Length: 167
Ligand code: SF4
Image (cartoon, rainbow, N blue to C red; front, top):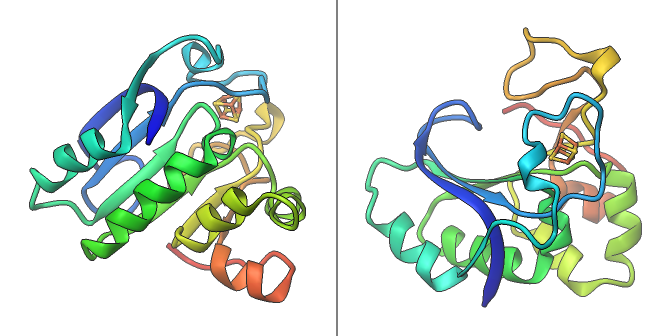
C-alpha cells in the first residue's frame, strides 16, 4: 500500500524505547508553533513509498525493538500505517505512534473511520496531542510538551476513554 513519507531512520534511540525504525510521514494539519519538523507539514511534499518497501528495510535490521510512526501526522495516513503496523507486529516488534490529535479525538474518529480504529488497535504506545510551546519541557522522555500523554491505545479503545501507561 502506498504512503507519503518525509524520511526513514534505520536505528533511532531518541524516538521511543530501544532501537527503533522511524517512519516520518509527510503531511500535518496541526501547524503547532515551534514544531521541530516543519518540512513535514506539506501534504504534497516528501516522497512516496510502499509499506512493502519499508518492511524489507525493517527486516534487514535484527537489532530493532520496534518501529515509531512520527511526523507529520500519522493519523492522516491510517490505512497504510495500520497495514504496516500489522506486518511489524507479526515480526514480534512493537509499534509506537505520535499524533497531534488527542486520544479523545482519535476515539471519536474511530467510531466512523475503520482505518483509524485499525491503526489504534495495532499500536502499543501512543504519544498524543499537539506540541504546545508554552508547555515545552526538555526533561520529558520522548515527548516535547507536558500536555502530551503516553497512552495505551488498545485499552483506550476498549474502555472508550484515555488510558495512560508507562513506556
Ligand atoms: S503535530 Fe507534530 S509535526 Fe504536526 S505541527 Fe505539531 S509538532 Fe509538528
